[in-house]
Image (cartoon, rainbow, N blue to C red; front, side, top):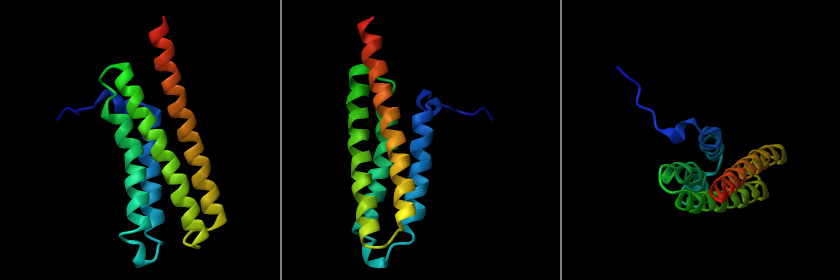
Length: 124
């Protein structure tokens, strides 16, 4: 059977966003059960939002895609706060927080670079 593939699935930033979603799910499994509908839920939604917004409008106009990429960056920032809270509550270690923040910084840079590429493409 032929594999069905969408263009956004080839974006490295999308693939890294999916990897980050996996990290967040694994991280949230360590949280206390009281966080199931609190921090865990919020963290998972924010992580999913990064990948979802990269995929959301990738086939539309560059201006629309850029708008969704900005939402993805906002979700990256939300994940930073969730990781910080998890660390302060001692749900994750300093090292886990640092690793998470490094991955989020990389995602943020990649999304920003993609936004710049879209803007420059429209100038030419």
